[in-house]
Length: 307
Image 1 (cartoon, rainbow, N blue to C red):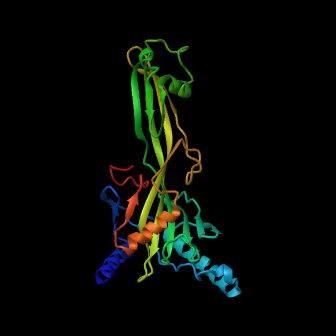
Image 2: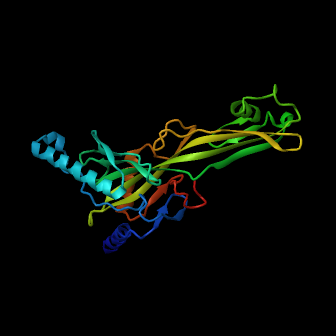
Image 3: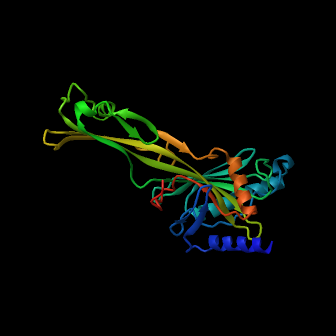
């Protein structure tokens, strides 16, 4: 018991000290150290209270309603100050009270999309320990290479080019998409080059537990997803290999903070299972098992292994 308290105290100290930049991640496969920039949303501390009352809707008294109203207001102020993002909406359903953030174009990514507090009256968690989930998003720093092919048109036009996260396309299909040309324009001996690449929008769900001794909210479970946006490049060369025509087909994610026009989407196991995420966070906290992480990346490009 004493050892457990010491360990949790150490975690609190890490969360409390703003100059700290190291967070240890534990996954089912490996453990790696990721260095977050100072004051990143991934290491900002908060100490807001949990939602008051265990089942305030059933009581439905003016006193209880006022308590929850005041909690929403004070929590909104704490979150806005901590993350430097404006809360633009507060929603409530049977299980969650959710704070949604505005997209601040003046801030560097990553930012938060929303924060969900699990109600004490919800039966989704296996414990009465308070939990919440932060939704953190960010973009990859540039594109990640897919595949490329160069050669004479007659030799490569039927070759299938790999596309990350998608079924491949032939060189001819990509040239038709990018340049709108094919056999009618290109002779058999025309040198060409075809390339694919992808940029990623990352969305990570971070399960937090409110420490029962100090009251700070600590991250114990990270589960991620990524949305891919494919870029195609088609190059036509002259007989000496000089590029004479090049066109790019690429897509801008819209809206930037939560794009819906993606080409691909990948999710880690349990990404869509918030019940699993909050219970995993509680389990990691209760049994001193460290921080669980299963993500593709953060938008910070912190290590060469991400995404």
